Length: 329
Image 1 (cartoon, helix red, strand yellow):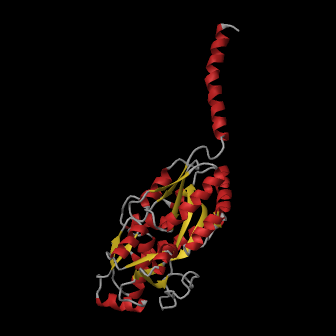
Image 2 (cartoon, one colour; image 1 turned 180 degrees about the vertical axis):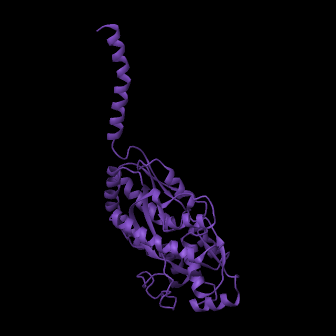
Image 3 (spheres, one colour; image 1 turned 90 degrees about the vertical axis):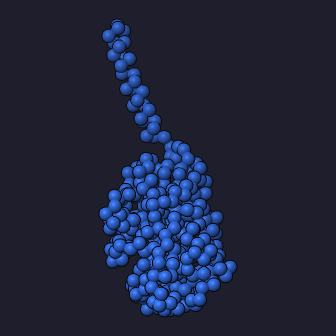
């Protein structure tokens, strides 16, 4: 081989090496490192309740650590949602979030703020939980029924404080739907998530909250909270004596707080398939089923195609509700 041929061969070697590296990278097994599951709220809420047992099951199924990262902030979960949207679409950053995912971009537009993310940036993997929201007050509160609460609120407009997971988060929208239907004005006190809001209710800082059965059940059983109504279309097994808003005459008040796992919309099909398979197995794990049922929030699994349809339909209803509510603080 002469000098010219040697130089030509040397020039080709780096290209060949790069090509081989690219092929090897493309064919590397998933997952190749730790998986981060972002929860855009503090511990103690519905998304956190879903993430922790699911994360443990996925860790066993996928063979890599699944780290649940509570990344609260921005009101209603927007900071964590946006961080997940910007992450590399390689399946190593997932998002366990709530129905507020669709509401928050609309709220940004309502207030002429830069939109933190768009729902189109996410690909639904699986729904995990789907519970009707419940209306809770401290056990020491004077209201024994929802009508007692409404009557008092009409006498004291804007004076009864209620907590939420942040402006236009799931708990805020549910309460404002009820307030608008009842013709009352309440005092909104936003927190960084459902966990801190429930702590504030127990501490007497606020007097009402909307939350999922799984985050309320133990407090109600311990005699620390009282539930007055259920935002669902029908009564639920964990609170069979609790009437729905519809039963009490509020026909347009219906709200569900679901939790689901998402990845980035640019995620490759093979990795999406692997995650769907893993989630189908995870929701059947005995420890997951036991944890959710003990909390009063049974598994409400939907695979990606059905979950995507569910998200689209629920999002349309919630965005319409936000537009109807308008600008509220």
